[in-house]
Image 1 (cartoon, rainbow, N blue to C red):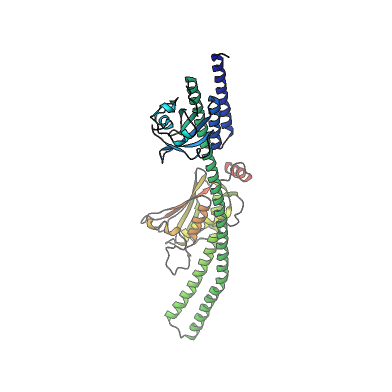
Image 2 (tube, rainbow, N blue to C red):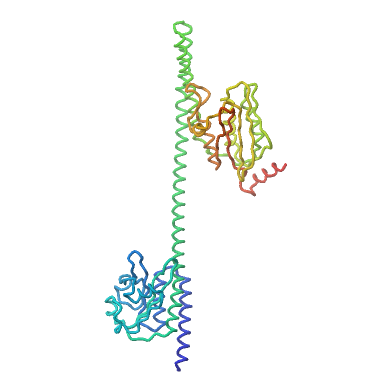
Length: 441
């Protein structure tokens, strides 16, 4: 066989080795196996006894043998070299150029680790393995006989290192993706656990509110009745003065207000429990029904202004929100004559609904406070308010993904409560189709 024929045969074998390794790297996700296979293929492709892959460690500024072929135990995963020009692999890493040493016995430049002598290493070639932000490390072949490496050997080794670099990057991306998937699974598990805990706490809160409301209503009713009986007795006997009668009145009113607080607490705790399915709700018609049920004082007008949207939603929570806002506007009005105007407009996938009155208004510094539970701007002895209604509004709106805010700036009269509500369920559902048909009509 001529030298030319042998060169062609060797070149074809090397090309087949690169192709086979590339195919292997695509199928394999374990980086350690990829690196070990790379060392083995390189050693066989160049007809040498040893090969290794060295990984750069920036914290230590060294190159550790990550995988290898032909080495005795205690080398792979253990031996390191400085990432500088005192070692063959360090020189290739620093310069980025192939580092060729055909006869280490005649080279006094390098400070070699003892394992080279233990394995009788005489010749080495090192090429850089590129990386994303910095080089991954170095690919090295070693032989225990003196060897003159030609240009084709260097081309093969460099090309192989480039294929290996891509395999390393792909494995790193796969590992990152696997880590992200695992993290996502962990987060989903934590989310589900939190949702279960929330469900338990919500159920406990609802149960507590029911028990508190049920167990305390009877004593409060008894206190109110006792106050009535005592007031009748002292009035009949004529032995009580105005101050005593006033104290009895206060006792009865305080008991009534506590009853309102308990009922409000129960309503607050039960928001979102067993919501009814979505239905087509005409907001204008709903406002009219609420106005009729409230029966506002003579001189008060409750009306819907503009085109009334038809929403696909559970009716009960929306009705509860509107009823609380409208009744609140009437209840806290400071005049015998007033107006409450409800209007709506589209806001993307939400509908913005405004409930405006011409009452005394709310100071800007109190806008957030009035939406908190048990917060009220009325006096401590006011029977008409529990301080829960607006917090129910806030909780119900936020539960469906909406927001609520207040516009009011006394001494200008009036306050406007603005909240957003989902316009419709997912397209294609029967209720969404019904909503769209009614809106078109």
